Length: 284
Image 1: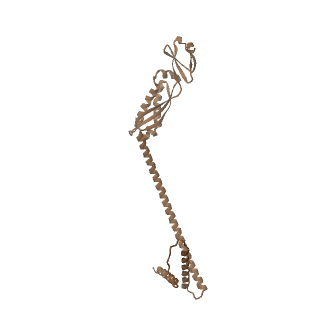
Image 2: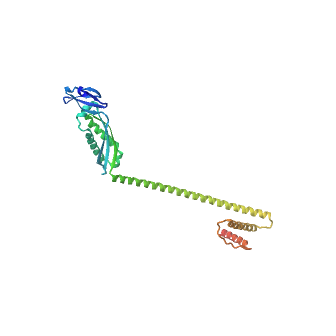
């Protein structure tokens, strides 16, 4: 019924190209329009004003002779005020955009090394967008945005890059581990030195206390027991230490068998040996 009466409906975000006897007449906005076909009025076609996206995969070579696939995503739309140019001047919009993308990428990427391509992908996208904007504006199209969404080197190159990265990380890990072991050894040595130093101080203080105790014992015994000499006191002290040592040896559960000559004169002999050893040490 609408066709008989010449009524047409234009959907939202779409414009229609109106012709009169095969010649461009007007651009019809969304809504209902009357086209009396008997007067040569007709719809030549429709043009969407929505943003469209075209993904372009381009294979090219970098400056360091690595082949890569660069995927560019171009978002574009037709301009309502230039709908006639967008409809009549281009027969295949997507192929036209793809040609410009190929041209810019294959002119830019061969000037860069592979690492620079990854780092400067935004600059490549900006170059593509600028070139497309200059070219497509004359045909009634607006370039909304251009993105480089993927840079994919050859599989062998990716494997080599991963191996290089893995080797670098292993080398860093080995360096850090060696540094940690070095710090542990230094701290261990410092702790051992400090322990030995403190042990030496303890032994020195122990010996000093023994000497002080012996001196006080000799003086007190000499004063309280008339007729005794310092030699008699030292003999008694040595005998006491001798029996204390034997007691400690016998009280230790893990002590191996120790054979000590013992008899009526053993104590005297041991005291004589200790005195002789001390005298030799003083003379030496």
